[in-house]
Length: 203
Image (cartoon, rainbow, N blue to C red; front, side):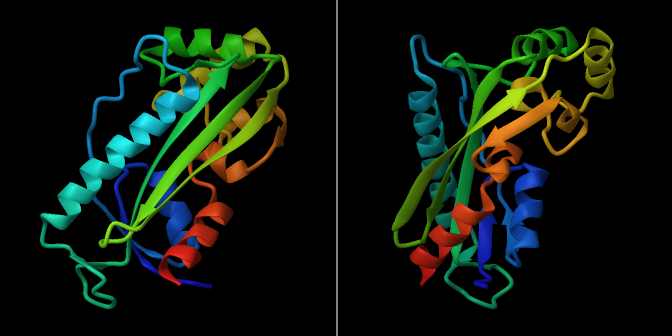
């Protein structure tokens, strides 16, 4: 399996853990951009715009720092830069991270007994500007969540920093009847697609 030095422009511990599980060495250099949704923007357009902006900001920061692209075994070297973003859409409307627990309750009630789509878009780039960008969408079907279950889950705080107000890899797994697509994309990074893309990019 290809093992690469990845510069991860994301503070997500889940993405780092997935990459490290695949055998990659990971250095985190998160970037901050304006992630506000534009009026009338579709979920697809929003995701493409955000990932493009993250990639541009991350590449600028990486190439202007002491981190050396393509340095192989060098402690400061990196082979590929990775950015990603995950959206949750219900009836084509985006469900962002909850602003508080009341908002988390509102989001989870909306998802209860319904199907929604989780999409992770990732971009990989070499220092020479060669890139691979891909979106991986998964349909998630939730059973009806009982009021006491919803209250107990919100109280855990698990979904406070997550789009859709839940973590499929955590306690919310009890609410998910089935998924159609990539489990990794729902967690935040589709390992299979990233692996194939890295092999194509780094050869």
